[in-house]
Image 1 (spheres, rainbow, N blue to C red):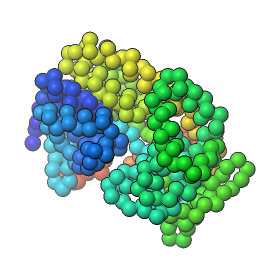
Image 2 (tube, rainbow, N blue to C red; image 1 turned 180 degrees about the vertical axis):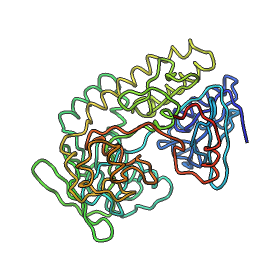
Image 3 (cartoon, one colour; image 1 turned 90 degrees about the horizontal axis):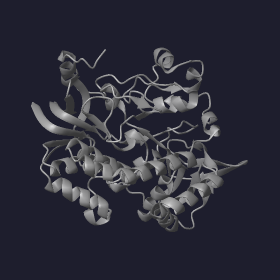
Image 4 (cartoon, rainbow, N blue to C red; image 1 turned 45 degrees about the vertical axis):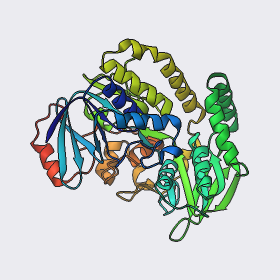
Amino acid sequence: MNDVYDLVVVGAGPGGLAAASTAAEAGMRVCLVDDNPSPGGQIWRGGIAPQKMSAAGADWFRRIDSARIATRYGWRAVAAPAPNVVRIEQPPGCVQDVRYTTLVIATGARELFLPFPGWTLPGIYGAGGLQAFVKGGFDVRGKRVVVAGTGPLLLAVAAHLRQAGARIVSIAEQAPMVRLMRFSLGLLRHQAGKLLEGAGYALRTAGVPYRTGAWVASAAGREKLEKVVIRSGSDLIEAEADILAIGYHLVPNTELAHLLRCNSENGFVVVDPMQQTSAKDIYCVGESTGIGGVDKALIEGRIAALAISGQTDRAEALFPSRDRQVQFARRLAAAFALREELRSLASSDTLVCRCEDVPHSALAHCSSWREAKLHTRCGMGPCQGRICGPATEFLFGWKGHAARPPLFPVEVATLAAVGKSESPLED
């Protein structure tokens, strides 16, 4: 089945919702694609009751519902078989080629996982992933939880888990206190609202030990997580735990942008002031252009849609707001930069690639990502390097190669369709 739209938006998080609804309200024929069964992304996870959502989130949901937008929830963009065509798949057995005049990539980001002894034990989750599970009904009442990693997300996750009935044992933030204080002072001068939001999370986690300059050194348990060891200065602190929620920043999902030959720099898609990429008719918004959170994504989504629909004056009026969010993103990255000690956590037998069971010792003798793949199959499992790729980049400084279709594991019928298509985008 082939459909043709003025605008196709891939990703239904805040940036995608803003782009799709703004364009539809301008009279454009829009299709919104997302691999989740409902919209909202990580921040506004689908299925949350409107009364439990922020006012901003509820408003964008209402605008999407009232606009005439073709939605493809539960569909995943897997290939670009021809110019201005994106192939989407919904298992089992559903494949569509969606044609567009303009494309907005709003694919968001995923969590960065850094290997340490015991990190593959059941009971260890990404911080954002665990929050999503709880939003979806996962019961954490009475569970002992350690929250660790870096960034403002830690306090937000801890507050949410505590509200859901979990017992937060400890919060470990790897950034030193001096950087956190500098970051807070910057927020006080430029974005006091975000500082107040953080203070609210701190209030909701009052009484929980909050350690700065601290990180998880190891985890242990027979068949599941039982104990977390936290390094804090020269001390090793043992904490009994049922769950460890850990998160070290986010990794932008740039695979589709790379497949479409969009230029990138420092891991992010390069865009002009109107959010247009180096590729003709393709725009990019949200975390793929720089990790900055929901406010940045919303503004960028609106700018892109206004530019695409010819409302350049309205788009330009949003530039100062976007600039403030970009500055916030830069301060965030500086404050929570990962410390060198995290590079040496993994022991020789610590798995780095979980899909192919590749330990750290097997990678230590490789000189590049390509060599690691050829000699160890690292990055060649179901996740196609989405987990171990960023980890090895941090550990060894390796850079991955450009994305190839299909972007995700697909059904044989979809793979056959990709093979039959003639694509000038492929080498």
